[in-house]
Image (tube, rainbow, N blue to C red):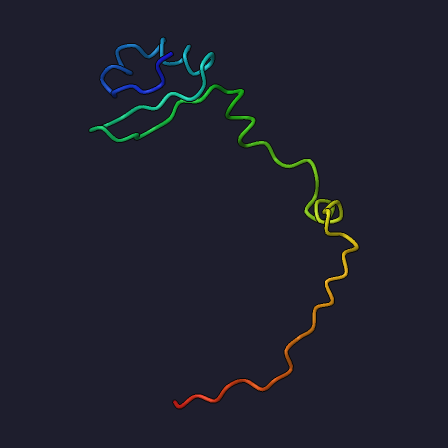
Length: 84
């Protein structure tokens, strides 16, 4: 189905644009040939804006890198000299 609409056409066929957003996904509205806005279904909007169910700490704890010994050492050499 169609997913790109010129502004004038989208205004004239707004109901169709909404139906397409629900059934076919995001609908791009163009002004002077460039996408100006995107119409989303509420289902898609909620999917994109839902908050993560896991805290950041829990996310890090579930990382595949947990327990990996990277043996990192800080470079203890003096900084280079610069002329000011």
